[in-house]
Image 1 (cartoon, chains in turn blue, yellow):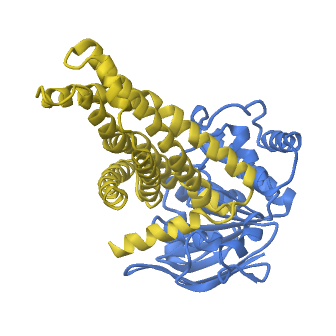
Image 2 (tube, each protein chain N blue to C red; image 1 turned 45 degrees about the vertical axis):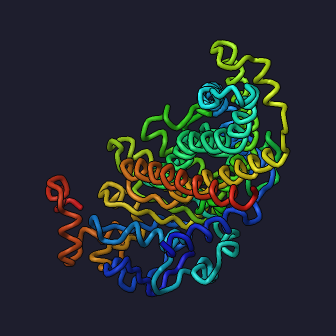
Length: 250
Length: 243
């Protein structure tokens, strides 16, 4: 479980996050949604420690992550997997080396054991036999899947995903969403996904936080999201013609 | 300026924190040494031969008096090559070749979130990315300078062979006349300092890149320019202190 309490983040004069508190449950897909510039990615980066909150605390299983220094955070960070918006695979390494990288640094496994784990992770994301390819040789969807394979290599307790469907076609997006959903259940992870893709919201949004102008505007699930009288949320959810047409059926 | 200096010093401190796993860092150091050393050997060889040849011809031209022995040209060319041309010009060329590569590589990793990925995993990103480059810089630049000195003198000998102002025999006599080992010490101290300057300044510029492709290019340019200025400044300081 991850708990955030009263998170503020300011860049210069710009207040990006204004006192956000929430609890993200284990074994669930927790979605942070909102329009562009609403503070979704900044909140995610504050949670994982890539940004230091101006004020507020982040707790991983009741351990105050915000108070820890870099060294103190390492044990928690080795339990974190993250999929970045552009996958952030290491260009100079092959697919297999990317997945084995955290294993090389933080485990005492033999080369054979690490290879086995990398193969297992690649099979899990349906990318068998792609071990020797380099990121430049992969499609966008394949990069995302390698990113997921690298994120789960250390069998993390926490999975963070930033815009998993950006730049992907709708079919591949569903594959990625299903994969994240299955892995969350399989590893009983606390998964936090930042997205503005309504297909993801309706498909895997077990717990959703809607951000608007840096504040938590609404909280609920995908079953409740279409039946709220929150104006800003409705503007966001039913922005597309497709969602407007489907409004009565949700 | 003081803010940047403070950030630079803090980054260097972080770079030399205890590594998570020595073997992984060692492999990275080896990779950087090959990239910096072997990768730069071609360009350093070419410029050294030409500079050595040109220096010898110019010195011979200026010493046209019958009162000065012809071997003096070899002596002056040797000392100029060892003290100034090989360390400084090699370092300026390496700032362009190695420094821009360091800044753009780290800068690209920054803007494509690869550095964030390292930090999320619990890896000390400055230590993993910057320390191996600095170690490669301070070990390989002196080696390259030694090669450059040897090839510079060879270039001078070739110029004598085909030029005719000084005979190769006189040139060799000049090379061997009154050699002071201190000049080699100065050259190696300079080379070590220049290696550190190139790697650390360019890594700093790359590490604090923000934005996109345009900013990566700007970081690489800044890295090379600042490195060149600092190389020339360090050249002056070391020369003043050691000679």
